[in-house]
Image 1 (cartoon, helix red, strand yellow):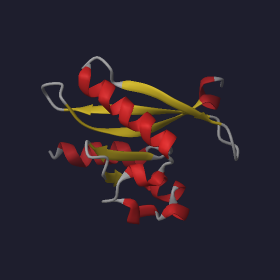
Image 2 (cartoon, rainbow, N blue to C red; image 1 turned 90 degrees about the horizontal axis):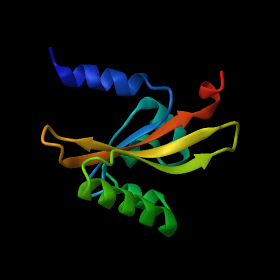
Image 3 (cartoon, rainbow, N blue to C red; image 1 turned 135 degrees about the vertical axis):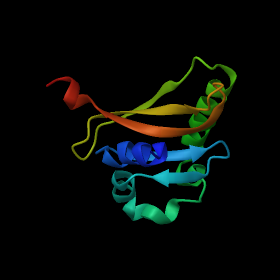
Image 4 (cartoon, helix red, strand yellow; image 1 turned 60 degrees about the vertical axis):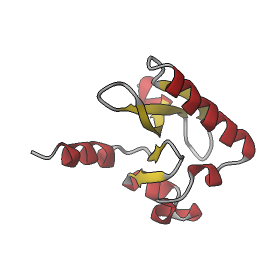
Length: 120
């Protein structure tokens, strides 16, 4: 069995946007929810581009600092970035580490968690 097929199925099945980046901040994958969510910014055409180009300078620094923290400390795997509460959204947004078998950081992704689901 191809584990990658299963992992892709998990990511693609998430109803919230997931944007996967490598350590040079290049977008290497967007699930269908992310493609739709970022459609006005280019959708799937963002793959291969720098995620930093999609953010203002303040957000760029947050992303860089989060990745640096995760690189320096293998126990840091999920960092809160901000709360999105507009257009009906009530999401906490996190930067999440992607690590290899040795625990080394190989990339990261942005994860949205719906706060409304926790209150149900």
